[in-house]
Image (cartoon, rainbow, N blue to C red; front, side):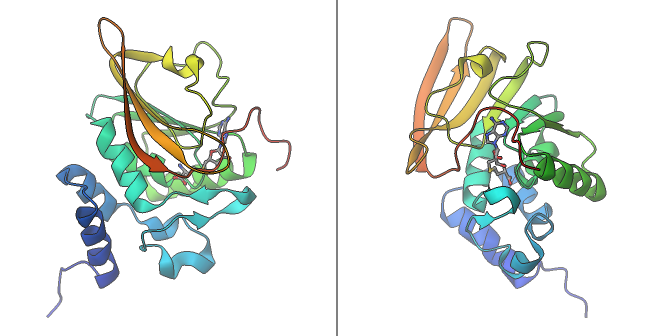
Length: 216
Ligand code: SAH
């Protein structure tokens, strides 16, 4: 008899996310559906469903699944949302966002990472994702506004230039803190009257750096 149970490593993956407090069913379902093993290096495929960050090209990392699920849950995504991600990396977070939102624009400063992520996202059929090479901290003024903005590299301060691109009712989430060490995940909500700020959990991200990378 053919079982339609997910493979054991995926069952553990779900259990870990639930145990750590992820409760949004749509987020959990998406985490189950998006194949993380397609976003890691060949050599790391076997460990793709463990709850840890892994190295990718250009000295960067694919985030820990719990952090991806947590940030996604905090964004409270709806199908009509236009989402901006800064820090494409492997493209995994962008793929997760794309299943829950309307359109995703993701920006990466390394050409190699942007090209690999774009090809991978296309191959996997996530048609509502656009991968852009650029400096996410210094985007041209005509980009935006967005309903949701997610920064997946550590910033020392919240970039004003991104906060400005948030619609009323919008949410921005970013790891704020020193480049080396621990950052705090901060969530900003833009209301009719101003900005609300909430500090969430401690995280560790690679730094957000200025400019498009010179290296390939
Ligand atoms: N979200 C990614 C992981 C991000 S790692 C994933 O799901 O795999 C952080 C990424 O941010 C790195 O790839 C890094 O090169 C990129 N980055 C850092 N500073 C940036 C900037 N100013 N603009 C765009 N991307 C940046």
